[in-house]
Length: 229
Image (tube, rainbow, N blue to C red; front, side, top):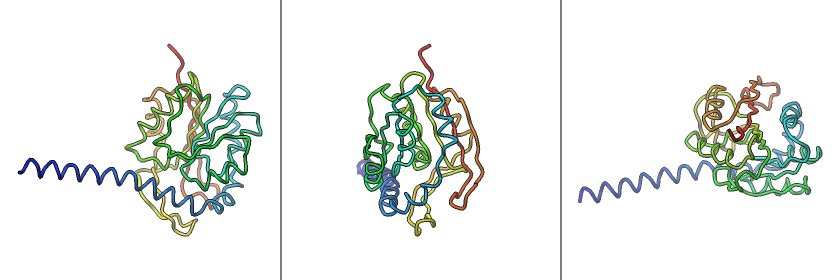
């Protein structure tokens, strides 16, 4: 009887953990669906042109770029206008609808980052600007492994995340208090994870807040998948 009760308790705990993991993604998806148009207006002027140009400097013309967490397609448009092939992915159907309208030349897919499945070595470069910060620390290792697998040998990976420590569900006062999940990192934490998963660090930079819209300093990294030895 005791063994059976222990098994039931373990199952319930496991189910609760799984629901928690699903819930934080669903909360974030809903928040972006609710605020998609406002988000598009607020971020249109925050073009990451300097970092995007640095990222593109490592790519051959017409390379295939995965815009991971593409939102309403701001950066996808920048890349398409430069002659690159773009696949945009976002968890929010409303964001993808805006992206398809803004950038009809690109291909867009509704998917949560943790469930994304693309062919092995099918992508030349990945642009993950302010998207992995919505992935839990527990899931980050598997996500980075999946992205590494998706990249071609010597493929380029750009990632930017908010600087800090810990993770939390927190109200975003910029959008009426909708809740979002945030994963904060230090530069050492992020670069160490990338190196452990097989990436070579090319550039790192910490950016202090430069607008009232930004809530934290930012860390950006450009790295490369190591080629065959």
